[in-house]
Image (tube, rainbow, N blue to C red; front, top):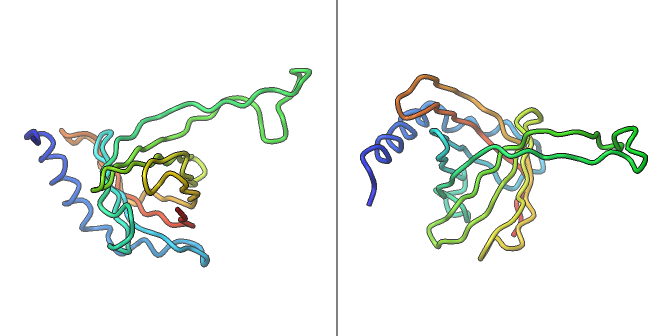
Length: 155
């Protein structure tokens, strides 16, 4: 059963989305997947440009997580990849069949990759880029973000 707030959030998502559909062609040449995402608070909806693709219209929950790398063996310097901690954004999506996948993104770098999945997404090896196209603050249902994404998707 959907709550009144849940329906309000979904209507807000669709209202904001109408201004951004069609701008997802910003990606690189070798892409085989692209689309639009809408996030209200910690809830998100994934819309693939290919409406027959797995994951189209999947609904997810997102949140921040920290990623830390260890220092070199003598603990005097970070490894070549860089030491210390960075924040990552993770979204776990569920499609109409009940299968799930989790994407992790680095908002500062504009990149994402799939970290795990179930069912048809169990062997997913996908990655790509993401860009926020619109942000609306101060909404009663939470901050609204609308973005586009693209990349290489494989299952």
